[in-house]
Image 1: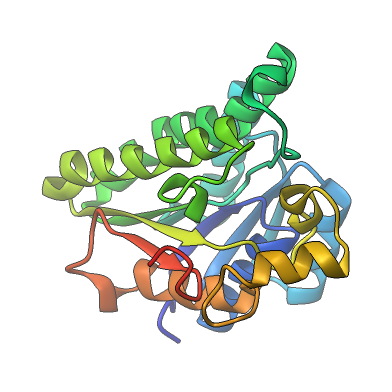
Image 2: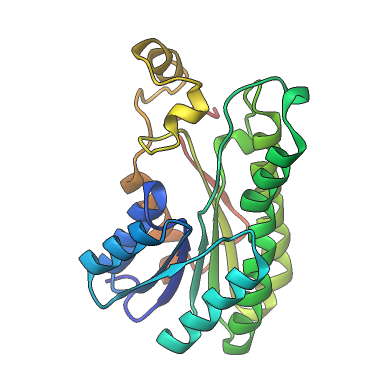
Length: 248
């Protein structure tokens, strides 16, 4: 029960890595708001996990939607201790100059603007109570970019740099900010990164991971629990690769 009594928001919490984090946080004693664009999936997961969970339909790139999320969480939980910026989107591999502006804007909205919008809501709450933990789920692409994913890589690199800058600014207020960089995992986004989910593409991708397997939601959740728990009270501004050695 390393998160006993903690109040958390996990964006993109209805599936993939986010679902794994939600499940582990609840098992560790936290109350969790599942903020997800997929309202039905969020409600199903919240119903399964019980009264410790709150499902909040959220578009993390929209100012009003994020504000409404925090209003509901404040009313239901009475405050906030942990924010996990997990919501994200990928793109299919393609030459950088071929991405349309609309697709670029949506990518940056979900992967970049969302961190800004949630910080504007969460930071005042955490400063007022003198404690808090913020975790960005970025990507190994942010530190070891892959070809034909330039703008995705850039968005995740932004998340890492933003977290480090936030960590420096917020440390005097008792707020820690860290990052987890997963390698591609067994989530709905896997096929997007590989271009196609075939035995051949899987084999090529796995060959770049020394441990020889994809990451799992449980892997990312384990790192998230540590970084958001009191055990990591001296850890801030860290970007932790959970990648089976890919970035070595």
